[in-house]
Structure formats: C-alpha cells, structure tokens
Length: 510
Image (cartoon, rainbow, N blue to C red; front, side, top):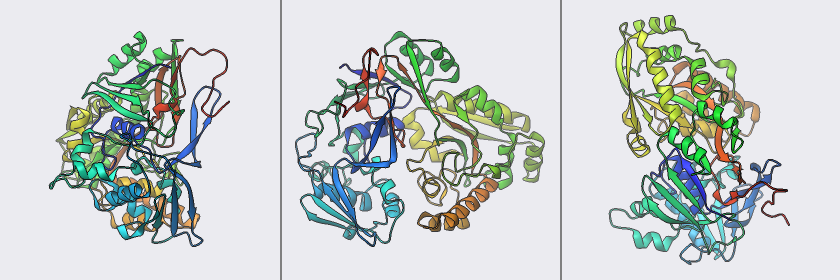
C-alpha cells in the first residue's frame, strides 16, 4: 500500500458535520466520521465501485426495525465501536448527535424536520446499544435520509469539554478539529495547502482502508492541478477544464472517470436586490445567456443541458417546460419593459478555484454587454465564497442533492427560507406544493405537484439554468478503487495505488 495524493479544487472551510461547508470539507467529514447507515458497493470490471440507494447496509447502526405503523424506528448499535480517542460509542452518542441536530447550531434542523423528528422527546434510548426514533407520521424518505453524511456521529463528552458559555455546542472547536469513529483521523494540517488523513488504528473495520493514508492538496489553479497530475506529483485530480481532459484522453498514464450526474450549475438571481426583484429582469438575463457556448466551451463533452430546476435523471424531471433560448431581442424588450433600456451594473461572485465557474462567468459577462448589462465578476477563495455568498446579487452556484428526489431537492434549494436558497425565492404556491409533495404517497399526484412547481419556477426565473455537468475526476492509471456514491463524496478507503496487473482484488473478496 502507499499514500494517495489528491489535487483538490476546493479548500476546507470547516469540519463541523452540522454546518454547511465546502466540497473539501464534506469529503473530510465523510472520511473522519462514521454515519448511522451506509450503502453497499458493487465492484465493477473497470476497477471502480458503485453504491446504490437500494443497497442499504449498517455502519454504526448494525440492524434496524420499523414498526408496523411505520412511525417508530429502532436502531441497534454495533458493539465495540469507539471514537478515535478510545471513547466508546453507543446509543447515547447517537441520541446526543441527533439532539444537537434538533436544538443545536447549523443546518440540520430542516433535515430533522424532513425526518419528522422535531423534538428531543422523539429520541428515546432503549439500552446502551438501542435507540428509538419516534416519527410524526410515515416517511417515504426515511431510508434515503438516515444514511446521509450529515448524521455523522459525534461524542458528547468531547463536545461538552470543548464548549464555552458563548458556544455551548463547541461549534468553534469542531470547525477546525475532528473526533469521529471514521476510517481516518486528521494528521498534519497546513490550512489552505494540505490536509493529511491517516488510517484510524482504532476503527472497527481495520480491513476497510486499502492505502497508507491520503494527502489532500489544495491547488487553486486548474492549470497547476493538471501539471501536477502529468508530473506524477498527484494521483487524483478534480476540477480540470475541458481542454485539459482532451490531453488526458491522449495520455496512457492517465484515466478519466466521468459519470452523468444530477448536479445543477446555475446563476442564482437574488430577489431581494434591485433590479432582480423584477421577474422581467430575471427573464431577460435567462434569454441572453449563450447556453450552447457554455456547454461546449466550458464543459466540452462532459455535461448535458439543464432544462429544469429538477435535473435530468431525477424523478419527475420535465424538460419540455423549458422556455429560454438565446434571444437578445427578447431580452432587450423585457429590460425595456422593466425600466432598464440601457441596462445596469451588477456583480457576480464565483470561486476562483473552480475553473468552470470562472470560465462560465466570463462568458456570461461578455454575452450581457450588448444589452448594457455590465457585470463585475468577483473571484474569491472557497472560504470567502461561502461566507459572502448571500451578499451578492448574482452568484455562480453548483448545487447537488444527496437524495435523488424532487421534493428533497426543492426543499433544500428553492423553498422559502431554505439555507441554500440564494435567490431568496419565496413563492407561497410553490412552498405549498413542496410541503405537500414531500410526504405524498401517491406517485401520480406527487409527480403532478413537482411538474407544477417546475413550471412556476421556470417562469419566475430565480435561477438561470446553465448546464448539468458530469461528475468527472482524473486519476493516474495506477489508481483503482474509486467509489461512486449517490452523494458524490469520495470515500478514500477504497483507493489503491498499484500497477494494474492481473485481476483486481476488491474488499470482501477472498
């Protein structure tokens, strides 16, 4: 075995499992913490793995039951699991974690609402290794929600030890430190440069990790990430540009892994900022965007059109509702009707480490100039992006829903008051459709609600829908074991570095 080096297009913005964070942070949390449940992976002939939501398996929770009326979930905790400092993990640890989610800091309370657990009284310890969740009503999303990365189990004693009167849940400590039960522990850290993940010697599955650790290097430039990959300085690279991928195809020492996804790349238009509080202005920008140019020049062959706020590949997607083609005359008419015949000035924020975002932002800026709409593209670091995002009128925004469900997706992104609702979009009819559709058991009624919500959202244009990118990563030919999970978060434990000779041995095989 050997250490794997990853070139990341994202920096760690925090390590608290219950707070929104960067892509690199979600990857860190996933590998430092175990969750309640996991998904079984299937070994594929090309040396990759694929996990399916239909193949639920235990992680900290060993087994589970659902009551006959589908309102009580009993979770049985796997004996012998401990945190990386040796502290045992049991039912009380899970209860504490879920209590922190319900009444503590961060974004997890809406997730608990979706789970229909909104009070701590609904969490009941049966014994040291069993916990009951009492749901308000049957929940069709139950087994999609419980395996999520957000339910990483945390230690109560450590949290209380690190808490302060102003920070009773130790959010400040958890933003920079980790204490989990996961397959890795955090080794050396150079903020903004490199984060090392060492195998956890106390993990309950010592056979899980198939490498000597992972070094995640933060490399801001896509050009530098590509150069490091070509030199052999890194084994895995994220966020390469389409022009780089052409060269990767021609290099026998490199391998492109590209998977269709339900990622949505959009430009969010803030309804609370003039002039984007006028639907005609938002529609005008949607008519002015050069969609085909964005797809071909920014993403090459590694994307598909994004024709609805519910992406292709997600149930109930209806691309026939799309109405915006590139039409500058129509855009001018709408701007004139809205009182902006000469255009206006505004700002568009994008992450400087994301080459596709910056490239797309600059193409959009150029496309809007003939309308008199002058955009300043503000390129910022990952940390600045996540702290300043809601302050900008326009934002390049990539969103992806870990649960492949239209109502889950809309709750997170476009329901009034949602934390990821950068547009501050708040349509009462759409909110009602989402709330009723979330638990609607009849599939046809649920689909009708979703289609109606899509129609309204497209008409009101809180997002300019840009493209639907593949999940693409480039590795050296010596890397096997890349695992594709529904949440697209990398599981480092499967990665192996060795020349491809003969058959590939997979975890669990004799």
